[in-house]
Length: 562
Image (cartoon, rainbow, N blue to C red; front, side):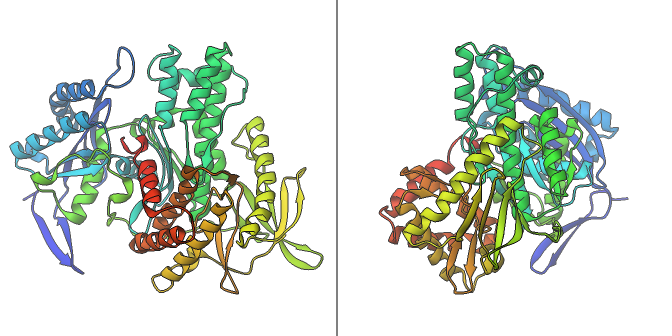
């Protein structure tokens, strides 16, 4: 039997690689502090998985020390993994390695080791995206098919889901990752590293103290939360109370944005992955949210949630079967390897969606939209419902402030000549708003190549008008814009809006719509956004360079390093 025999077939101008027999792949992981080796086969069996964690004596993870750690352990772990898999070196058919994102020196150690193994064994090699590997191994070991995934670790905090040929980032941190936030708090307060497990333990005996809750559209921010938590610690506030409040705020923000993505995509599955998923409170919160939306919650075994070699091996196999190996000169590391840069040809679009009850027009991330009437006129009622996953102190504060803010902003953006639903009534006691029912279609449902430029110009012009009176929408997605029966653009859902004259806040609005477009149609997203930007600049006081420079600044922050 010739085990390595491979058939190369060209079908619809796309090369496909099919193996005649079972294939064995060795994966090498080392994006940060964990060295991992995993071996899987093409039947989805995880034959072995071994690893070695770096625990720094003080401070955080130093890139050079992490690289030295990988260089030391990779040669030791490979033979251990092969022995546990009960195979020989000659049985390996493919070498897969984590190409990025991650710490530069660490990634280089891994890539060098993978190249050396590939050349010595004369086996093909492939590099994979670390973030996507977390999702694919999660799907392998659960029965998840097409979930909205919350990926949280020391270096990453992203809400990811597959749409139109790629994994899309529906939301992510604007600064530091949640794991980094918890670890840094642990270091600054002498709790040790990693900080997450200690904070989780302390939080069980804590009470709530007010801390910042920062959700901007589909993104979240942890730096202000961390800074205020450290200030309270220096003031002598009980560390148990700070730990409880830090954890509740951080996780509520993550779950809210995951809920927004679930609402936007209308999918029926949620999955949690990454090292921070070890936290039982985060698991509980995400599970509750999924249940509230009628979605199934998936949680891989913890050994598959953290960084491991099996996930690298499995993704390598998926990619190799659809696109073949890399040349050695293509195996350079990609330190800022974006999740949405990878063509995901091994997944077919799954159109299964959530089914809403008859009484609901829509179920949003923070409210239910129900049919109603106002003196015989068709209307809708937006009812902000309590969130069981959030503690009452946080939930009450958010619901009250957003209800009041949205009611005012709905009226105020009309000053700029921008259409929004007519406000009929506001009930602060029941946290609801009664407003005009808009007859029309959501932009996400009608945007295509034929009408993309016309719609883009309308969107850019209207956003510029809103910003001209220093209102920031806060959540300008293609789900929050209607084209009414008169062909006019109507903006809805201003619950995250605010008043601001800061360029950063206004450009953040543009970034939300930019990312939202990618989730609908990646092929025309750039073209549509370029037209939005041109129209925005034409109708605002900002130059294109000012906007592009600020966009670049926001997009290049620490959230993309690992």
